[in-house]
Image (tube, rainbow, N blue to C red; front, side, top):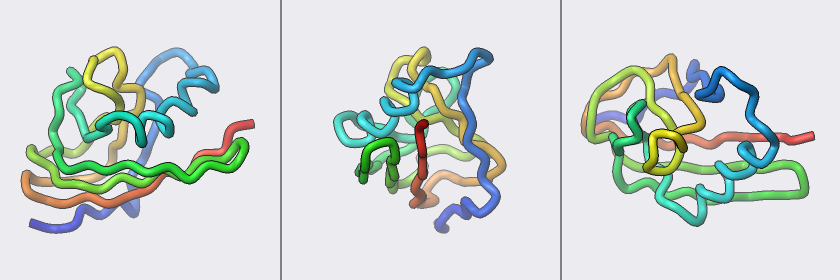
Length: 110
């Protein structure tokens, strides 16, 4: 078990079409109101124990996530359980089952 290194991680929309501003904001809202855990591309959870918290000020959000991976891989998705709701892809990392994660996402919306 290790803490996953997010130094070179890349986060991007999991969509070929642009996301609208509410879809950006929804990740932050869901971080608090729903169980946002790492998921595979089908929407199945590959992490547990996630806790999300949100610090928001007008058009700025900082979302915190922490928990433990239950699978191995080099990318995961953030969103709610439905595959259509895995809006964010996090790549350029490596993790194994049992590794812990702790990261935050800064987001500014204009």
